[in-house]
Length: 624
Image (cartoon, rainbow, N blue to C red; front, side):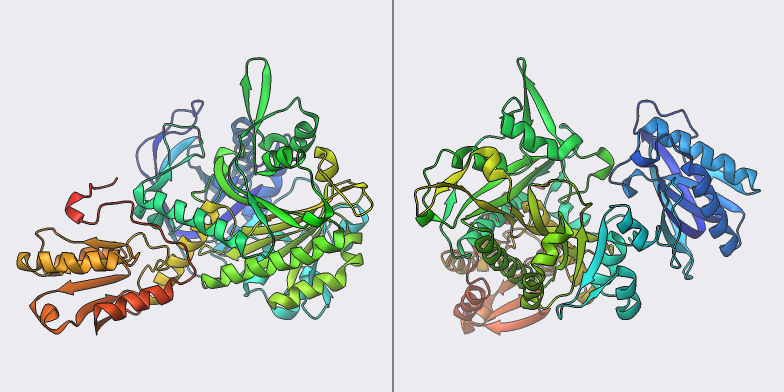
């Protein structure tokens, strides 16, 4: 069970509408509780049928005593968990928790379960006012830091194991690394979250949602859960990022074959069924007649189904296949997150086919370097979580792993899966950013696959005329399309907190320039300037509304336009335009030729698309 404990001045909430048909009737008036410990709770699948409630109650009492309050408010918050329990089990656990805390002498209130609620909470600012806990029903011996079972005990039981590897090749347990280097770095936060199960996520609505709203990216209420819709501006961003993803594959240095196919695969096909088992209850399935189909969760199925029919020689390797694949995963409703976790998303999925494992490792490094190049181009950086299907793969290739770390100047968290399981892969890297809410978020990835060539019947003919299986790299170099946008939006929020302005990268901005005539008499000449800019493959808008100059400029700034050009008598006579540069927050005088040159230099090497809305503001509807 996961909980967040907030020592609060007050909490106010109001039941608005039922989220579950089975939700019990409740008070729909606003409720307020003063000087209390607010406990956000998420009951998980692993808690079903257990007595975890008693342990949760004990932890609530401990914290309540530390902050010296007898008032407790238990608030269901399913979004804390990626694997929530059934509603019935969640209600049971919360009821038992409430009763146990009450029995210990505390005043306990419960926010209604199964309702959408408005919420307002004021959290105190002392060190104990914001705490998170992950509580298990089983009795594991606690170590000194309270991180759960002892590290060595976990190894003996054949469970997962974590170590931290530095770029100098030194190994630390997660506890040792945090003790020596601290937990304030982005890697430190990821180590705590992934290895030590300490969650320091900030509470509240993610601020990047306002960027989504600005560009018309939202859940589609008339579809299944987890499906997005895009307005014209959001769709522009989607398409130009898809073009960028395609362009990045061409920079790797091997032949790339762009393919396209279906999303439906027959579960009666042996290879499809075997591969599908790896995803368990995350499969998104449909029935057609008497047959059951799985919706693909990446481009693997289509590319493998196609490439098994190709005649491939050793002379053709290595090569890659690529598709921006519509992908489907049946995520739990409580897991959904705009642009990060959806049931339908788009994966720019490239598979690199190699002759040998050593050749695969060579291209793995090349891909990893490219992944870092692209995230740093956005002004961000990744922390790496290596996953090994067995520790022996790491021990055998430790020198290669250290070489990977040195190449990008990073230490990394290494995760070893339990021994004795025959995985189809040996190693993968999850590339995480630390988002504005202090959450590690996986964006890019690369993996070595040694099983699917045989499973799908893909092979090549070697120098001796013998059929050989291939080693395959699974790569998403910029992440999914939506996750790349998530990174861009999160970066924009971080920049806003630094400089007071949301700044979208110039090459991505749906409207790069806006031309603003001062008066009606300037419209004709200002439009000529706008057309000149447009002819240089620059996205330009034109404010032909009847608003005042001040309102026009303010409107352009609110629309996050990169450059705003004011055109009046003085500018037309001198040839020096008055240009507002959003990135520097300065007004600059320059001729149109210099502005065009500056934009060209800043967008060099990036894809271009024309605007998806009319140039003239008067012709654009108000998008909702």
